[in-house]
Amino acid sequence: MVFHPREGRNPSAWTRREFLWRSAALGVSLPTLSAILSACADGSNATADLAIGTPSSPVSQPLFDDNPAIASGLAKEDGPLQLYNWEQYINPDTIPAAEEALGTEIVVNTFFNEEEALQKLISGELSFDVWFPTAQSVPKVVAGKLLQPLNHEYIPNLGNVWPQLASPFYDQGSQYTVPYVVYQTGIAWRVDLVDSADIEGQENPWDVFWNSKYNGIAGLYDDFRETLYMTMFRNGVTDPINATPDQITAAADSLIELIDLMNIRFSIDGTYTGIPEGRFGLHEAWSGDVVATPSYFPEGSDPTVMRYLWPVRSGSSARGLIANDTLAVLKGAPHPVLAHQFINFMLDEANALENFGWNGYQPPQNGLDVNLLVEDEWVPDYLSSAIVLPEDFDNPRAVVAVQIPAEQEALLLDAWSRVQSGA
Image (cartoon, rainbow, N blue to C red; front, top):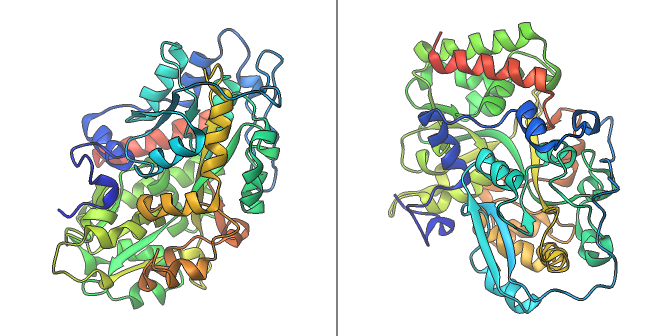
């Protein structure tokens, strides 16, 4: 295997995506919304404080008298600043650069899954300053009082962020979070193994995963939300977030069909390592994984066979997911001023670009000309379709990932269990 630079320091470490695959294989359960709220509530009515926004109905997250933002004009602490991040999810060169800029030591603490992270945060046994939650988890961790509100006077670089995410629907006014990276869920393939016309020329490109021509070389993400939603898009469901029980059942049935029809395989590394290695010719794909794929192609092979399509941009009526991850300051952070300064550092356009060059996941920065990302060779031209555009979040066929209500989550997990068992 040829490792992407983000793997180079410690190839044996589990990346964020790899852990999800391993946890599924080992039967590790991720925390449900109900479990998190119960654990975080500390006797309060956290469910009543759960504010789940959507692009059409944005929300401001609740503020609490016992959890205020820090005051303005405070001196920074001595450090060290403690980060709490997914394994291998920040450029290792970013850390010494931030240490020099902030004048303090920075310690990167890592976790392998949300259950581990949340259990440690809820226990209060460990103290961290900056956390990297997904946008869809923001409502539950705010309701559970795991984050402290931000003081924007320490974060002037928030003005560098795309308007769609500077005051996002899930956290209006960016009261608790700022965006870290953005990504779409689309289709990746090799033109030497798959006919592009079977994807680019179709009314519903998601149908390609049911095309028996590609039996044995097709893969889907081992992720209940991503793959059930994709299947609902293929089945013509326009709003999978509010899908009916019958629509969820039909999606599970459609996925079970693929066991015999396609000899389908579920993976997490199928895009960024499986396609370069030839284990797959076709895979469901996060755009950030696609940008990383050229570095995984074995020496002497041709990465220019890679292609990517987000069906929302295909000219068809198909829909697709888009999402982002965030940066936040934890409640009770020992070094809150430094934490704000670090977040501001990461929102600097030059620093965000350097991180993107290693991480593969794109920062939503106003100053990063998407055309120059190709021209300056941050993204190869044959994968320019994997660049996320600000207007993608406004596309009427884009489905933006949001926190799933507990009842809906239970239905999806039950359906996914049936898919995993092949029943």
